[in-house]
Length: 390
Image (cartoon, rainbow, N blue to C red; front, side, top):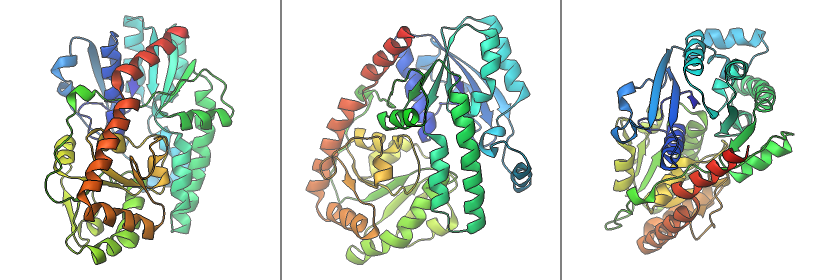
């Protein structure tokens, strides 16, 4: 597996998805090797590989300092490359990849997302393995949607340019794989509609439910949000929520509080009335366990909102948008609350806050839904069968 960050510890959506994939492969009896881009943004420690995986997983790190800057972003305007992925070309990573492919014969080389796709030709020249891309999102769609909700004209134009470049890169690179593994059936259908004809199998980010307890619902409900604010859709969505939705919630329920956990939380969010922001070093699982109603106010994005799956698996009531629940076929009003306009979003939150029994019942139905569709054992077995058919 070629990754743009370490899955350990799984402290954001994409690392949780990769962690799930690694554990699923190990559960299915596979031997797993990870070549990790240890970037300046997501710097982690090789020693974070859990003890229970060390006998079946080998992990190697290559440190990359690829932090974006206004200067390099501006200079990119005069090239034809997507700035979003061009920063992940790295000689040291290429050399580490070559060394590993010369040392060991693999059955599958799985690239996580788009950023390691620069190395396809190198892999082909050194390995007979089947080459698979694990698509966490339809990447260019995230940037197109982000541009739509950007109020600054120049930023919106820049995002639109990058989205168009990324779309060209995404379709050209993905067509070179032997197979594609989108994270949701919706993404699979989207890739097919874009003209990709390679074999595809959708595989959700799956969880081991034997290790996930449903927390007790005693006490008054409260709201919480989990998500990194250096990911633009999270920042856009939360600012929309605090400006358009939260004042209505507080007008009806003045004592309501929303607990916010996320890397690089901005000062304007942290300073909003009845918002309690927490340092990102807190354990996300522990944070989930302490709170009741998960709020996911996304207006842009693609793929699977893994934080919603995580919340549902722990029996949390969830209030989100159509974009948030995209790829999750939960029934609105039964397993999740769905709202796209501020008035409805506030109403759904107020109803759950004022009716703890309703919120608890929704959390129970959410857990049942998650167990049915996001079970690690089932998802892993089906994916291995797909790989064996290639």
